[in-house]
Image (cartoon, rainbow, N blue to C red; front, side, top):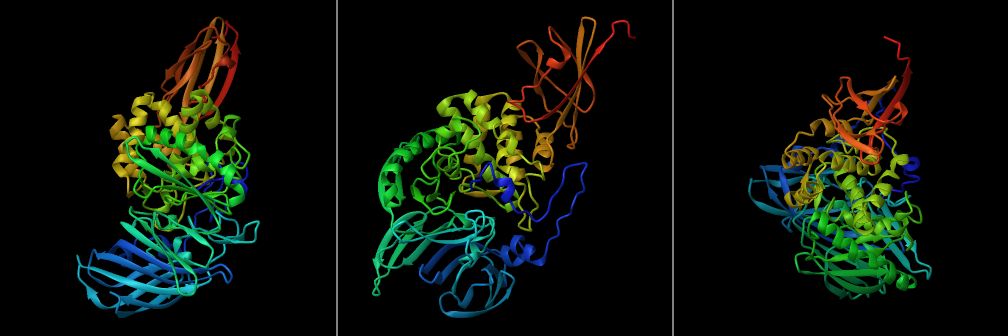
Length: 564
């Protein structure tokens, strides 16, 4: 998902604030509803999703949807009660086991507990079909608020989209709404009024005109997919096609769907897709959904990373709707780059729990800088990255709280980008760094993982233990502070320094200027150390803060040579 770097801090709504040291710390208060939404409890872990068939009819004139979802699953452990999820404002008409046997159900908040007519043995395969209907929640400020967007284009035609990251896909269709369990594949049958088109995830298998004149579009997703990535885009859209040759030698189809009046603009701006693909494939590995292709679909909201159907609403201008942290940032279309980066980070490699959404957003944000570096060079990439510093709040940790649907700080975007750039600088070996990035994607593609999986992989790949780094930057609120006391006594100039950090045994090396124009590695710990400075004034000591995201507190003093 994208963020507005200039106003995001003003619109981010959080349940609580985990303040930095020195301020009162408010403990989050979680409810039964939070646990039902976020906990992989026994009624969820007893079965594994293998396939969904979502078959829905969407009426823009009434903002009403109706239909069914068939949930194919394998029984992990014997049960007769299972939990699925559907928002309480949506009606459930009936539930059938294996297409014929009625099942009963009870509802608690947005959870649905399905009681089956018999116990299902471990290892067996079954399906339930949930028939439902209702007016789904309307997004007040998409994509930040989950729900449907019911708009009209300039010609007055319906223009409909859905965004539900964080809020949950169960706001509009019944499913196991937890990121830990993705279906292996999915069929979407979306029926819309005559004259309208639906663009969804995956490949279009069939278009069928029904007896009442409405049209059904069958889209098949042949890879695992996050529930929140499942989407519809309904309207009158113009279509043009291109292709890209992947590093694997395979042809990747590029399909573009836009409001007709923007057709020529799109043909120009969307040319950025090919160099983006080349940049990301070099850095992260082959595009992960080549069978299902790649689509950009113009939307009535800013944008979202819907798998193989990326929503685009950046007005065909540079940066984030005309704003960027550096001049170079205006040369790229932020939404194309950031949201498409999620095809690798978030859609292919997914977090098991929303507490680790930083895996999606920090790597997705860092990918922006990867693209800038590939097109304009490393110095411009550093300007782009460091331009994000004023947006960082350091209000609470990047990693959230698992099992209660609680994300970490919105800093997972800009701070996450700065932190990954810092880790790259600490590793100090670009070949190794990019092997690690490609390795994470290759090792965990089409899987759900958590922070420990990422951290363990980096430590093993780098051959070093960076646990102290991960604990400070991802699990603590503030960034590490390097306290420096520089002095000059006669001709001798020295700097004393040490880390002030919450993480145990924090010992991150950094590069410091020890003589004019010369930076060398220093290795601060939580104990005072000293370095000699040559040809410099005490106040000239500095850290390479374009490479390391740290808080430097420098004090200096001039001492009389006679002072003992």
